[in-house]
Amino acid sequence: MKQVKYTITRTSIQRLLRHRALAMLTLTAVLVLSLAPSRFLAPAWADDPMSVVQTTVNRALSVLRDNQTPLAQRQDKLRQIVSATFDFTEMAKSALGYHWKQITAAQQQEFTTAFVAFIEDSYLSKINDYRGQQVAFLTARNDGPQYAQVNTNIIEPNGQDPIHVNYLLLQKDTTWKIYDVTVDAISIIANYRNQFNRVMNNKGYDTLISDLKSKQAALAARLANH
Image 1 (cartoon, rainbow, N blue to C red):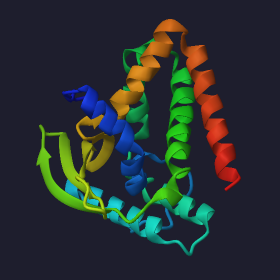
Image 2 (image 1 turned 135 degrees about the vertical axis):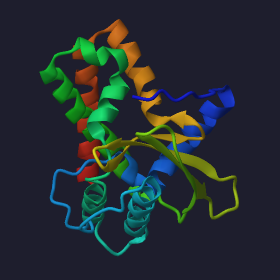
Image 3 (image 1 turned 180 degrees about the horizontal axis):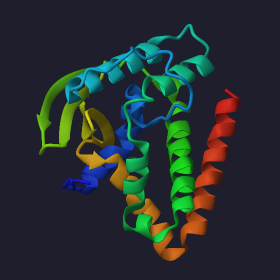
Image 4 (image 1 turned 90 degrees about the vertical axis):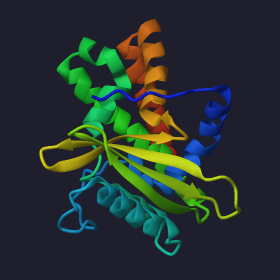
């Protein structure tokens, strides 16, 4: 996978922590998985990075703005909207970093399932916190024959500085897939990788997967009670 360089300062980390949940609320499509048929998708996606991002984000925003539909149905729509757009296996592999090759194929599948479920529930649990932010689609550029980046801004309704949210895409066969998202130049996946590496180095895979499943179960229970 192509490596992306980031400049991380105390200010940028604080801004990430402050705005990451807001960014992902506005772009809930970023890190959610669908196991159901894509009833809410058009028959085909336009085959260029900007169109993939625009279509996904605009459909997600439409669901977030819909306060009349029950919460569970809105969450299900968001899952389905992005089922064909995100490469969750690649995301899980990247989040585990060099430890990926140190675990078995069965553990890789177990980790991928738990990681995606955790991310999904983390952001879906905040769906009602959306406050009318808009998304400006800025530029798209190819970064080699298989990689691209689409830059966007989340525009705050109260006039605060925009949040810079960029999508990193990988072309597989003829389809563009999102494999990471940066918020103010800090990678969401790299942020998880740093946390997972500490656990793997200090306590090993069994502790990591146990902790991840436990946190996801707590989030799932909270969603079920909404």
